[in-house]
Image 1 (cartoon, rainbow, N blue to C red):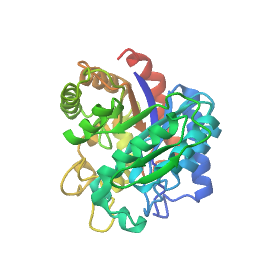
Image 2 (image 1 turned 45 degrees about the vertical axis):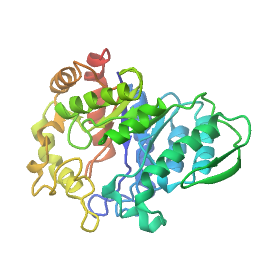
Image 3 (image 1 turned 135 degrees about the horizontal axis):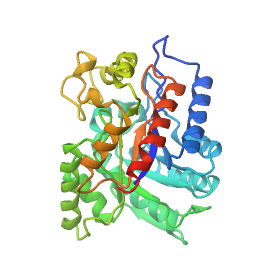
Image 4 (image 1 turned 180 degrees about the horizontal axis):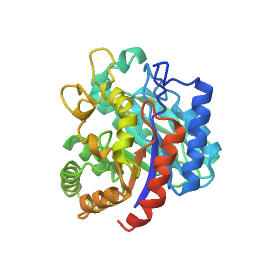
Length: 349
């Protein structure tokens, strides 16, 4: 199994947690360099828009900076919100980033979850079109990267003629995976195209997801068979939250307020992570599902990984880089512990 670190680059507005933006971004890229040095295989970046915490709205820019600040580690998107982009322009940008990185780019794509519907009006996009915008965006970008001749495309959302991009990505083909975490329709979209997949793992509330992961894996394998694929044809990506320390209780006491702020976070009347967690945001930190697994000892993490993934696990698992109130230095310490004390014991999964 490969391991990475996922950055949402949220810089909370609360005065005692907020850092000047230039300092915040500098710290993030130094953190990525440290993750490369301690032995992680990849870093990935997410995005959202119009966010009070500045949820990495400039993903192609920060991805380019990540490529510049690293040399070995793979870089990726986790995920690009495809409905907000023109697919040809996005295909061009990603091709250039792949070249600038020396062929280290992994492309994770998604359609924007319903809990982020508030982003659509500010960008002038109809949220009802999200599935077709994702479907057509995937198909157009893949043709942009592979076609040696101009092509035309006419679908529900895009009508394009004489499409051709140059330069093409260094990697042939450019590695692409598509998130399919919650529905059979999403799984069918990915399996039908024979793409790699982003699955439902620990996400924001734990390391692996336990039985939730196992249920997702069974559903994914059914989707593969339903679409004429071998159940294990795809590489699976997922992410979770876990910080490794010899004293989880002390770490929880130190960071519980910031983690609670993250989970209690709202935009208007919408709790963005309700579909992952609960119908009502937690009233106190200890109401967060699996809160006691956010900080673990090395042995606890090794046991959870081996137990959950005994019948099959992801090919790549990314851990959240930091949470509200946690400094880059503190995060680096926890993740360094994971790299040095956990990864060597579970590489064979």
